[in-house]
Length: 589
Image (cartoon, rainbow, N blue to C red):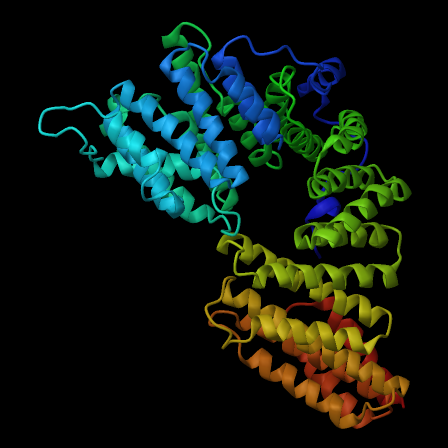
């Protein structure tokens, strides 16, 4: 049985952990949107922070206007670095080569003027690697040479060289903090390796950097680890970041510049990674981040945090808090600028309503999410919508409707698992979901006496579990068990169809399905003899009943005798008694 999704959540009521939660007053305050209009930035540091927020909220034009307003305002070099980095970020988002060249030139020139020649050379090298169109005579290359003062061992006009360690750090910093090409899919595993290498190289070059990037690198490492499915690693990285941030504030004797919002980002990671196993801690991290957003207008960040908060509350069984949070979320998600960002919060609201047994109310956000996901070809959204839909129909005893949702779930899981951009860690879980959904399709189709869905589900399982299907991403014994389950189910469905007189189904089809099931059982992995005996006995049991239903007493008695002996060896007394009754019935006929 599939237990992920709403069906795995605690039931309604029973808020057994309520005493560990903040009161609803704190929730009301934390879930309020930012008070608009926000105060206008008063200096370059504040402008850099606001520009970063605007870029994350997908308002690049507003960010650009703000950067231009403060570009010539006097400021500390570190604050100007942050502002110019936001300018470059926006230029890369716009893919405007002229703006990218000019903003890169300004950033490199700043580093040169402040004496950070090696960092300037590394940044120039990295950006030229990422943006080949910038090479050649341009404002960027002229700035790199003309602003470089002479130093011992280097003639005027000769660009300084960056060390290997500096290049490792700047490559990771640029890749994680600046937008890359739109047609390149993210690779969390590679990103994590790159960020770990940068953190290892950082101590060797830290003194030669205008701004220490450690906290940003650690945030992106936590996000990459989360993306590749390493939740414990992501949790550790985020906690390390928070500890380092506290130490930095103590040393600086006050708040530090944090345009990347690394502390908020760390709390957001923890709200997601701790949500299932440590939901109370996740709730507190989500609230910490939300309370820091009162002067930040960033709907994607805010809605993402509230979604994580709602899931943690559901995992904690905090019914009243979850209901309040879901009500705020369904209202606030309308402020998102892009439709595809609404899928996840809408599904979270639907899951909360399922948990509260408000099934009719759950269909509204669920179908809204499904419509958006279908329009965006969002297979993840379609998968979760089908999972929730199946859960609702199962709870209401609607087997035919549940069968349709389960088939959609299996299809979405298969497409995602076969997508080359899906990380390996996610692929194994998707294949597990596909197999479990296919197994449920088979059972529901058997209950409804529908042969075609059984055949389709069995074929899908065969495709995924065949021994020659390449390197398995799930344990061999699990794949074998699903393959046997599918073949036995197909045998039962064929036998039932034969008994009902379904056109095109013959006795030889039933016998062929039985032999195929026995063949799969015989292919058991080493050390699974007991499980194989169970399957062989179960197959004999069902075969005996099918033969008895067709009036073939002699063969039915032989199959029943084998099944009884098998159940006795397995110590299944109730099954032995049931087979004794069948044998008595067959003997009397």
